[in-house]
Amino acid sequence: MLTKKVLKLKQWISESDNIVFFGGAGVSTESGIPDFRSADGLYYLKYEYPPETILSHSFFMKNTREFYNFYKDKMIYDNVKPNITHLRLADLEEKGRLKAVITQNIDGLHQEAGSKNVLELHGSILRNYCMDCSQFYSIAYIQEAKEIPRCKCGGIIKPDVVLYEEALDDNTVTKAIQSISSADVLIIGGTSLSVYPASGLIRYYKGNKMVLINKSVTPYDGEADLLIQAGLGEVFKDI
Image 1 (cartoon, one colour):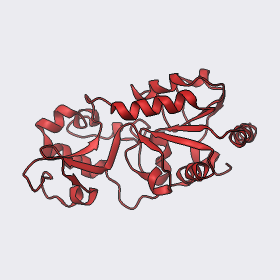
Image 2: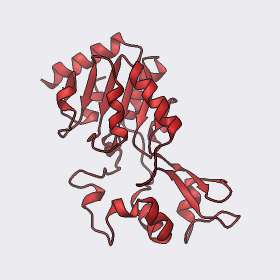
Image 3: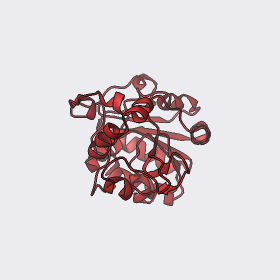
Image 4: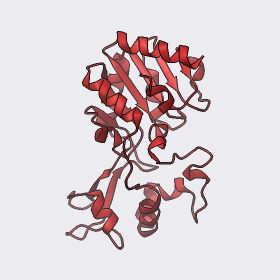
């Protein structure tokens, strides 16, 4: 059954030059980055505060040191590399078939794999800015900071990631909606489709080739034109 579904996906890909990929944490788990909601994800680890509390705007502002202790320990992963899914998507873009990658991930692995048009709904750990003067700082600067990372002006540096209680970037959302609404084929992969407002963006798809690839059940399974319940690597190694 899986082989037949992958063959159908390959056919749709070969017939289209307007494909959009919408991905979540499951895209990067095969690179060694744990997701939030699987049995071994961050939500099931025990800390003094729940991860969703630590990764909120109010917690960052009130408990910045504790935020960074968790952030540097659990949100930044060294020596991770793009996996087969990242690489295949970059290849499809280079061949002119894939028009955009819309990701909920903050790890920058799509760009490292070679993808150019990447819309990061939740920002990136690779970008960090002073809250006072907007000076840019690298991820290395954050990692090397002994205490709270501070700018040379004295301001606190904040990762360019969307925390709980913060809104998504309007420009990024607009581009994502435009990409999804005009796509011939929409491939959704590695996401529980339970994080809003990001997951609600797939409602803008108007076509009849929505592909949903995920190991577990999602709220949108019944709406998929092609449902593949498998790991992304298992599917993309044959694309």
